[in-house]
Image (tube, rainbow over all chains, first blue to last red; front, side):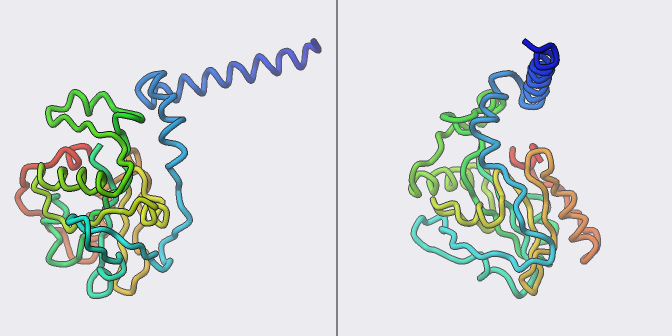
Amino acid sequence: MNPVAKWGLISVGVLLVAAYAGLSVMAGGPKDALFMLRYALPHMHRGTLKVGDDAPDAVLVDLDGASRFHIRERTGARPLVLVFGSFT
Amino acid sequence: MQLYDDYKDHVDFLTIYIREAHPQDEWQMKSNLKDKDDVCYTQPKNLEQRVAIASDFTKRFKFGVPFGIDQMSNAANDAYAAWPERLYVIDETGHISYKGGNGPFKYDPKEVRAWLAQRYGEVKHPEAAATPAEKKS
């Protein structure tokens, strides 16, 4: 194999191992890094919304499981703080 | 939620429950297992399951902040790029006035508090017992 190609491959390999090690430290372990790649990164986006943009609307379900309401029904009179999250 | 208690007289709040971040059948966190509150759920596969987990959360922590649940299409989550947790402030004209970063690392209620304090002054009521979500943040 061409020495340049050989060292290029070795460098890429070292970088990948280093990147995975860094991700493992951030995630809490090698297994967590794998789960992060599989389950977290596909769902995590910076989004295109910017300060000053019109706030998007969406229909939400009430805790009774039946009633529906729009996010934008809650805007207008006063500022609205949106807190997105889950239980786990 | 302390922020809610402090500023609910000035602004409205809406908590939006979105897809689970660390369910048992995906990337479960060890801290959820160790947690005395035992926060272990699988990722909801239908709206009934999503509503059940949201109800469990609000009942368990006597969560008094107005609450809405994202539909299974994840429309609200997608519109706001919210997962796993995120904060926004929408002003009276319906425009985004504050956009927080993605949690957990860039989820920062202190930034919202600063936004509110700039408008309404600093408000700090005596702290009530914090929920795990608040302790985390």
